[in-house]
Image (cartoon, rainbow, N blue to C red; front, side):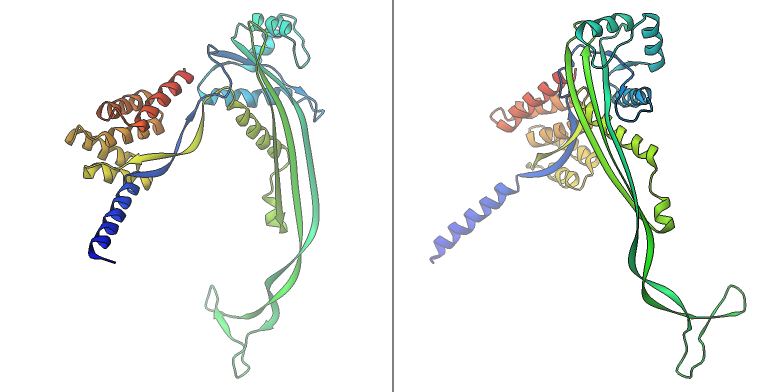
Amino acid sequence: MSRETRSAMIAAACLGLMGCSQTEQVKVERLEPPLADVHGIKELAVLPFADRATGLDVGSPVAEKLAGVVINTGRYRVMKIDQVKKRLAGAGINFTYPPDAAMVRKIGAALGVDAVLCGELQKFSFDETGGVLKAREQVWTDEYVRDRGGNVISDAGTGDEAVPRKRMENRVVEKNSLRRSAVLELEVRMADAFLGNVICAESETESGSWQGTGPAGIAKIPGREVIFDLLLDRAAKKFVRQIAAHPIEEDRVLEHGTFHATNLGVELAKNNLWDEAMEKWLQATKAKPEESAAYYNLGVAFERKGIFDFASKAYQNALTRKPQSQRYIKAVAAIQKLMKDLE
């Protein structure tokens, strides 16, 4: 191989490495818009749920749980459950699930909200099984540890007295075990209180299993009521993704630039030091205003924080400095769509 050929290959390899080092992929958690079209809905009421599963009439606690999860999103004003019951009783409204469009409109007129949430607990199965497990453990024996002369070896006790050292050995022992498992199915629907039409309807299923061995392990297993509440909370949170913004994790790209602060920011972000990274990118934009990568990276950081107007401005600044960048064009379009979807 000639010297010229080797030089050309080295140059090509260097260019390839430079191209690979121009971007870095990172994991970013950001808000995803509601899966259903809930534009214009600001205030809602959660109606008592039908209980088809337990026979214990837990419809009101189910509604309370769902209402609490919805309130925590910060997306809606939610009427209190006792106020819902009082107004429905005052209007003489009784309904079975699912209410038809005419009943939804009647309920909406009585409550004065934009939409109602209703549903039913379709299933809650709970199973508890016990048994005996065999396990190999080190246990104390009645024998003592002796030295070569046959004398019992002692250790210092809590006081001045000597405590003979007992021998331990591996043995197979039997221990009681307990396993609790449950499955919960919850159907929830949102209906427009003025039109009566169903905006979204989902059936969510959650299950879990807990097992403990020995008295201490069994004591740590949650009971039936705790398990019910845990699975209900999971199902409610899963449904709320339909009607409210929710966090998702996705792969995003950060760009290296020509200024050292830009590249240092990328390294900090890779190590989840986003606040420090933002400081470096801000330094880069001040020291080198033409550094488009710093603006773009700031956009990713602001989007991660949920500060979407700042993210949009940062992406726009990056695009102004490099109008031909498809990455910047897509970032600007995506953030504008996200802001609109979250209105």
